[in-house]
Length: 244
Image 1 (cartoon, rainbow, N blue to C red):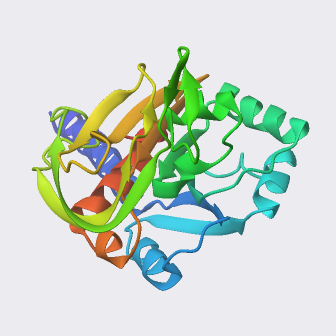
Image 2: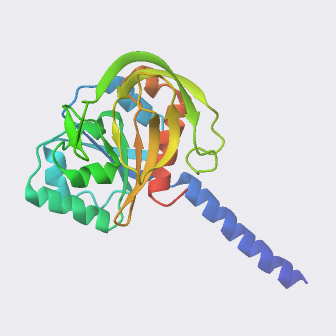
């Protein structure tokens, strides 16, 4: 009996140590920026406050150069807060190889504007902010638009998803994107009820072996300091790396 008790105590201790190691382990992410000005102080303060997350910053044009050299692969997840359009054929191939390997990707706010003429990116993110009118299914569509400093009511569309579970509907003051093109295959997590905003505020997508999240919110300090916003990002990072 004593040996049996010691046996279970030993494995209970191993389980506890594993939990502590998981809680104390750092998630190593790469933040991709460039092509759009933003509130750098508030943005990086938000990331500094993220528990158990360490980040490295790379700015365009060095970001896609790093991608070609395989420099993205050592990170647990990649977070994009960029707006970039210049891309070479070899860089496109590197992007495609990245999702074939299953790297988790999180796209924030204006990253949906990147690579306007590359449909692979449209299908990867699951949507696009169009900076000019475009044709879809033979019909001319209006360009996307934006409005600053709106108070918006955000509703949780999927209350059972690991990213949004336990999060109540909330209000946030932020920039709204209108007339976004959103692909049919995405899974909606959040909706935006403001008439000047596109209805979907957050979604998940899959490409190759990669899990993908897009969150439309996040223009400045008013968003970065919102507790729900920070929680959604932290959970998104863990979800795309299959840890949530």
